[in-house]
Image 1 (cartoon, rainbow, N blue to C red):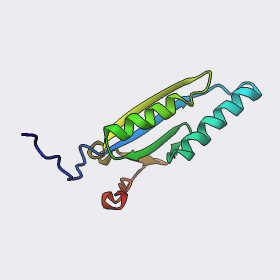
Image 2: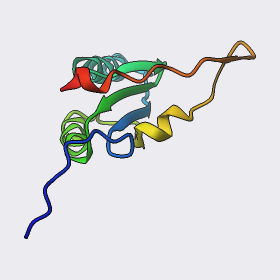
Image 3: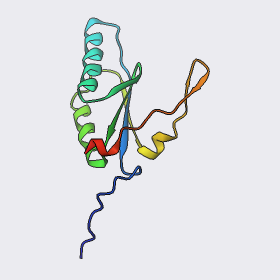
Length: 115
């Protein structure tokens, strides 16, 4: 007998995707490619965390895999791109500093509003 799947939203199943990149911008084509990649990330619901670091909330491993395939299909010709995932619980533990001051943790999205 199959165990019924839980509809409980767990901070250990919900995920954050971080895309970090270092793209060359020495030529006009490289600048266009870098801009196109940043715009693609924004169109996919990522938000800029820092200049070359973009983050997006997703509702689990399947959603992450879907986003990863779209990222892979839109990679620029040159440059380094790293994709990291954190569970929602891990993301809660990120310590932020700005101008030598500790900042409040970012608010996680309202999980119920996502569904």
